[in-house]
Structures are given as structure tokens and as C-alpha cells.
Image 1 (cartoon, each protein chain N blue to C red):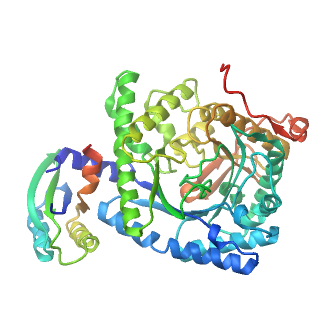
Image 2 (cartoon, chains in turn purple, orange; image 1 turned 45 degrees about the vertical axis):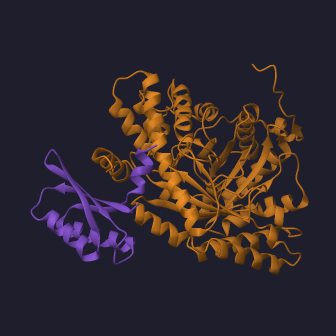
Length: 91
Length: 452
């Protein structure tokens, strides 16, 4: 089974968010397997599920790269290993 | 695919509701450090601690990043020093404490616990020497924590030890008077102390533990109080379910971090401590949970019942989430570390008597309570004896971490900063229990039939 991570983006809607996050993913070898988007009032939340087995850098560094994009766009963008969600919500 | 709603819930818990891992604590046995030569003993201790926990901080940093959850404290607990000190005199024990502090500094951890003694039935010369060294040890170190177990349900209460601790606490307050008597915030007196507790100041590595072990303490009062608010106007059976579900989720994260830390450090996993540990941050308060359950202010009538229900639900939810549960496991009520508790004391609603009653139904005891600096030793001993009796009679852990803040009085408050928070000086009774305390001896172990 492939190792996955969740990239979450929350904040005010903005042009080119998906493009920028996808760029980082392709640059470092994270394979996007699912994208979903929810709008909560004027805020929006995007969840991207990516495979991280073929990352070209350690996952902790990938987390930093993703966070930098968030800072540039003024959004909360975080990459988190999927195990934290699985352990919390699946028995 | 994980449900989007679940993902957002987890993220919200961490970012908005202060969910964190309170501590990853590595327990380390010091038995193989024993030597009759003081320098060799101290060097062995330093070497064992810094070697065993070498990777603790880098691995916790890695885990924080990987899972996106803060790990607030990284700590080490060791075998009670009095069990490995051999012929050390008090001065030697002070040097040992300083060596622990140096090891903690090298590792970059937040606290190191285990400068302590187990004297519930009586003390050896080693234990007396260590206890005598506590004030100087805490005054001359930054990260060392000390605990003394003075009673168990099976052994009864060692009142001689309690009498001694009254004077040790006063002396510690005096020696650290320049810093709001902070030494007392790192010193705790226990009944029925657990041997695998990851929380300070009471953490130590028990004699039945393996060479090294990883224990994890979770937190998350904010998560529970938000869920209670969202639940709205439901009855208490339904509310208990809400708390259990949140506790399960919080504990599962603790279990994940414990398992991963164990794998990456190659040290066996011990326990997850099912705790609701508050911080002074707004919204990270156990008092806030009790108030969200429907009390106008924490400390009013009904507080004990609400806390008993909360504590029980936290355990029921948490116990299924972890393969091994231990430590203190329950809601903590440290006054200075909980913004809601501080407010309740300042309002005059939360008294020391109510806190004492609350400790009968939740984790630990009279914790981080500041009292006037001129409180007599006998009164401090009386407070300890009362609290310890609750633990002994109810077969549970209780403890006292009290700060007779030098030169301070009711109306003042002391600020420790960081996780230790701010403590308003609490009102005490002035009438003396001195004759009772000075009788000394032991209070016999309680009978465990004819329960009433």
C-alpha cells in the first residue's frame, strides 16, 4: 500500500491556488490522487490527497516547501501524513 | 479516501482548539550507573541519559512536522536518584541534580524528573540525604524536577516524611525567592505515585520498568470544551458520549506518536497517559470544560459532580484508543496553569477546600497552588496530610504541589511564565494543626472492607 499525505488549504479564495500547489507536488514527485473542495462561508477549504513514496526530498522538507507557498498566497497550507487522520477517525 | 469533514475536524482541533501532544517522555533506568565512586556515578548517569535519549528532540521535531501536531514538551524521567545514590551525602545529591540538569541541557529537553525518593513506610539514610538536598538542588538547577512519595494505600501515611516535607517546601520557597519561589513548582509530594507517569513534576522511572521506555501524555481540553458547546442543550448521558468520542480521538493521536517515537528511537512503548492537561492559553482550560457543561463559574456547587463525570468519560473514551494506558490518566486541575481556574480563584468562587474535594474524583491533586509566604510549616503539612489521605483512602494517586510564595500575600499573584502560568495567592485557614503533625509516626493503612 502506498504512503499518502493530505495537503490542506484553507483561507480566502484566490486565483491559481490549485496550480501553485500542484506545481510543488510535481516538482518534488508527489503524485496527486484526489482533490476535493468545500466552501465554508467566504472561506474555502481544499483537500488534496497525494502519494509520497516517490518524493525527491524527505517528507519533512516537503512540508516546509508547501508551507512556503501558503505564506506567499496568504493561506494556511499544510501537508500532513495521512496516519494522523486515520488514527483519529478510523477504528 | 479519508472523509473531508474528518480532515477538517482534525485540522481545526490542532489549529483552533489547541490540540497537542503535551509530552513525549523517555524513562531511563539508572541502575547500571551505580558506583561507589561519586564522580564515576555522576559521569555514568550523564553518559547513560545523553546516550539513551540522544535522538529524543530531533525525532520529536520530525514527528511534529510529519503529522502536523505540536509536541510541546520533550522530557526524561530517571530511576529515583535515592535508589542509585549509594553513599552520596546531601552535597553529593546536589551535585547529582546538577549533573541531571547538564544532561537535560545537552539533550535540549524541557524537564528531567526523578530527583526523588519513595518513603511511604520509612526512609533510608540515602533517602534522608536526598530529601535534605532538595531545596539546594532545585535552587541550583533549571530543569530538574523532584517528587517524594509519602504514602500508599497498602503502607499507610508516613507522617514523619510529611513533617519533613513541610520544612523542605518552605526552604525551597526561600532559596528560590528571587524567582517567585519557583523551586516549589518543581517539587511534588505524592500518595500512591505511579511509576510510569510522563508528566512533571512527578515523573520518574519506576523500579519495575525496563531499561528505557517511551511514555506519552496527551492534552486537549479545548477540543473537549468546543465539542460540548457544539452539542448544545443535551442531557448528561448524551454529553458523556460526546466527551468519550473526543477523548478517543485525542488519545489515538497520542498512541500514534508514541508508536512512531518508539519505532524511530528503538525504545519500547510504555503507556499513553489519558490526560486533559490544560495550559494558561485561552481555550485550553479544564475549568472552561466544566463551565461549558453548565456551571456559571468553576468551583461553584456542582463542580465536583461535573468533574467526576468528565474524568470518567475521558478514561472510558481513551482506554479503547490505546494499547497500554497508565500514568496519572485523568483531568488535571493545576490552578496556575489553567486560565479558567485562575479566573475562578480571583473571583473568589474556587477555594482550596473545593479544590480538595475535586481531587477526590480526578487526576492528581492540589496542584500549582500558591499560598501566602508566611504560611507555617505545620499548615503546609496539614494541607499535604489532608490531600494524601484522600488518595490513600480512595486507592488513587493524589499529590500536592504548593508554593508558599516568599513575601507574598492574599491579593498578590506570582507569574512563572510559560506552561507554569500565573498563580493568585490563595486564602488558607490560620489555625494550627501543629500538635497533630508533630505527633509523627505513621497513619495506618486503611481497611478495605466495610466500605462507607
